[in-house]
Length: 208
Length: 124
Image 1: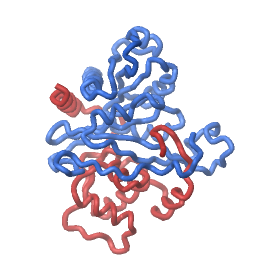
Image 2: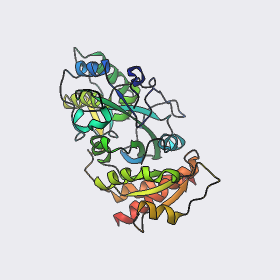
Image 3: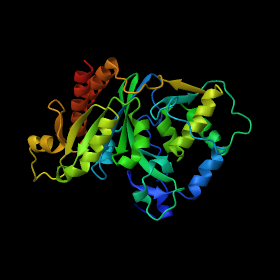
Image 4: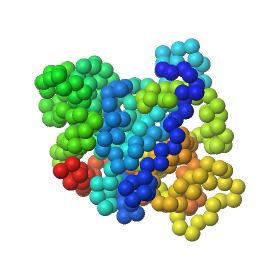
């Protein structure tokens, strides 16, 4: 945790014009859907969102009240302190009347209050996994389960030299047999898009 | 700079939020979710005595539809504060909302199919 107050400043407002120069959603859009991109710290959530978003990913801040903050995260700080968590998100227009928002959601248990807000109305979650740090994914899966979100696993393959067997990942994360596991490079729009497609196909299967 | 997922203590910013909201509790996500699309209704006039944040929201939202999260991000307002001010405008009849307030764990098959189709055309 960064204790420098000046570091709480968000980056300046990002005005991110679409190709037609407008920041706005097309006036024909009647439906906004939401998918969460979840995973532990620095797993590549922001990169993933940036590779797919039609707007430069935007950042918002959500305030966490003391009730949602565990004491060990604020050692030496009074319990009146409010903390802020930064969320990155992006947008894709998928149809004349439909936009999809991708919200990067941090996976720490202390952000449960935030999850309640994020999970509401979400179609599902794409769980980004770093195969070299699988154990850091456990608390994220706990949160996904807690909020009853359907999900697929996308193994972010930063390191092309190392190959991870799907079965290793499934066993380590104790996944259900029908939970999709796909490999993706979060920097690559097509690869990221295919991971989202795998998730949405799974959501459709589960909705059937 | 706050990296996503990291925390930083809030100092003067917290006081600022308190002043903007008049010390009121921030509303829950019942009415306006992060991805709810909002715009200023046509032929409405900015309420007298509107503070600078409400003016900024008015100016931004008069141009078209944006999600609640986008409004907050463009104006560098904490989400809770933006949502409270937008909820005020909604209750005063100044704000139009697209899409129903989301229900918990509601899965809409038609939306999923449309999302899938859209992604497939996009990715090829």
